[in-house]
Length: 208
Ligand code: GRF
Image (tube, rainbow, N blue to C red; front, side, top):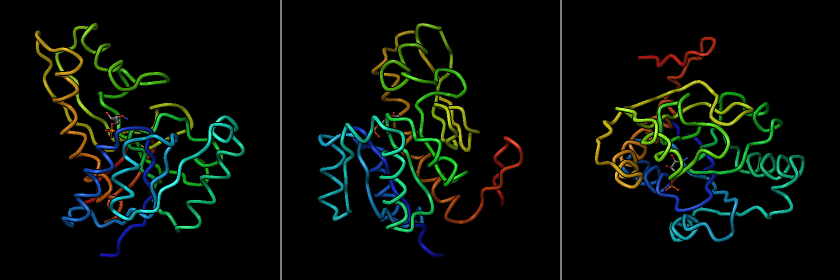
């Protein structure tokens, strides 16, 4: 199987990027991380990517704040590396519409809850888990979904549940969900690499 050229976009710790890279090394996902793009110069994940010899770049604030410039920077990067799948792994910026249109159904995101609940603008990290606990949910989980022009609204590709317990804190719940994220993201990339994804209206069908 040919290796799918992918770009990974991060904003912080990058544990999903690391999990994906390790899965690729174990040949569980037939892909190659051609570049890691960060929305912050100080994202911890950049350290790992550099150590692994993966080309990295970070996007300056002025560029991030202009949809036009941001789109141009991303499209140039993706074209340079002939990217076929864009993986948002804890990337906190909205992808400009122009990029979503150019890479229609070729951008995926990992979210630490069961969408469409507990998603949307500003719903990331600890806030998601706090909201799940405040609501009194009995289950939460992780979602890998296609990226559309709004936050967390694209069709789900993979979802998996975990139980929520009475004694949970945002931290214990996050710790239960993170390993699920680390499993689902490489699995989704492998589905794209194997051309197993078919989109029927909003339903993502996984071909056998
Ligand atoms: C993850 O929980 C992911 O679901 C969300 O942001 C977090 C990023 O964590 N989108 P990491 O940077 O991959 O460790």
